[in-house]
Amino acid sequence: MLMLRIESCVSWIVVVIIFVLGILGVIVNGSVQPNTQKEFVLNTIGILSTLLVLPLALKLFLLNTTRSLRRMNHDEALDFYHVWSLVRLVIVTLCIAFNVVVYFMTLNMTGLLCAFIGVCITIYCLPTKQRITRYLDEVNNDLVNQ
Image (cartoon, rainbow, N blue to C red; front, side):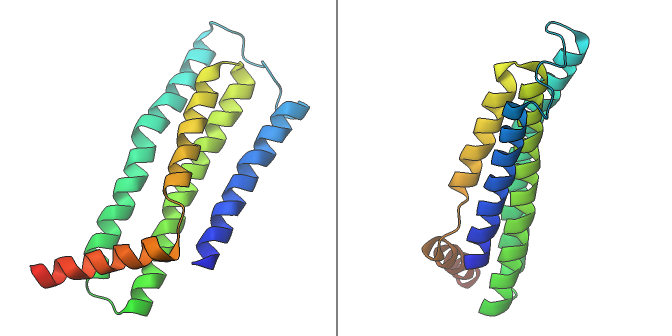
């Protein structure tokens, strides 16, 4: 559980570093001209990644953990939960980072809004001992009830 929290903090630090690089001009601000095909494509990819990839990451985690945890003991289940939480976190962080870069390249608020949605998902998925225990108990109770 501690490792999951550390990994979540590292993902936020990566996003903050990318944001700071954009503010400092390392990511060239406004490198894409407004109202061009390139801006449209970048914004469309950012929006689609937010609308498709983020829910897919959440669903992928749910499907893989729900089915597989039923066959494992508690320690194996915790390790498996950790792996899929990390996969979900990496997918969400990549989406956030891409949208932050799109924001600085286009200076269009669409990228920043999509990045904010991804940050909200990371906060929603923030692991706590109680959430993990409750989730594992629910999965095991579903097994008993079937």
